[in-house]
Image (cartoon, rainbow, N blue to C red):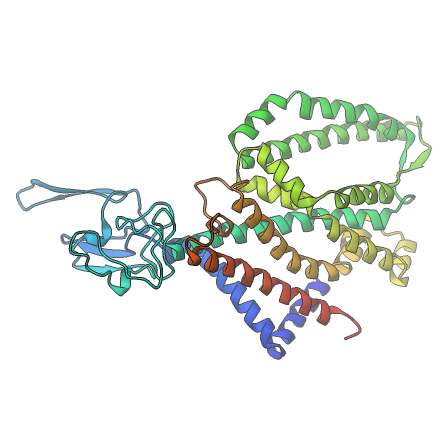
Length: 432
């Protein structure tokens, strides 16, 4: 698409000319790579080891159980990869991850709230100092978990929520904003028969999609937020299918000469009122209330942030579409008889995406902040999952490193997305 090529070209120019953009892009790329490679970068098991004459890859086979026999076939040792004290074994060869600690449980050292600047010792009466290789370089939390390992694995959840939530918001905002600007209040016209049949179709669709399936939806909500989002999407799909069936029946009646008179649907007014309603609500408070009702799940957090964050994108897309609708090439295409589908998806939407990239850049930072706020309050994200917001302590004065490093990760990520958003806004502005 032309707009996408223009954005990529603008980004290349920014990277060459602006060191802040280069630093922000490099930092975000580093965070994304860290999230993708978290299991390799931070793991309590070696990447490779040779033990008792056998070669193993414990980090990649964490659930493996192996047995060792001597030359006479007698059982010597049973290796359960989930329970071995990996740091205390004597290896013939070993390759450790960059951070030899995992996020799921405290290591065998059990150093609770160990300061990154203070002494750290092996367990035992002799109090031997930890070698540099096994030090907790950013300290540990109140459960003895390595903070650097938690930050590495927490980047996966935080970035996933930010990218997926903004992707959902962008999809909804682009489609609804384009529909509002393209059809207005008078361009989408349907027959009276279709309109009359859509009313009972809506009632019947609501009955089968939500009333009949209410027990399934309640069970999914009790199971997890992700399961609830999946069942909700299934109900919405069923509702849309029933509406489509009744709309098709209305179209057949109109073709037969019954109720052929066309009426206009106020698409722009309807979508604009929904946008005004959602923007009048306190978003963070609404997130807290809804997330506290359902069982925690990353899908729930993504769905809530996405469903509450599409309004800004829709407003900008609607404004761009209204501007494009007055251009001569679109009027010529309409005069040549191009169908609305072709005009909307091939000519209008691709040329209306310029402000969307800017909002997406800012939106990723906003989504990460929203997820961090929910996680800090232990809402939304399941307890077994790690995110940056969960690492922030409730009593920050007890361990300064638990406040500094997670807060710094959130701050730098949001700052990087805001820098990219501001520079994209400047470079895509035709006045520059």
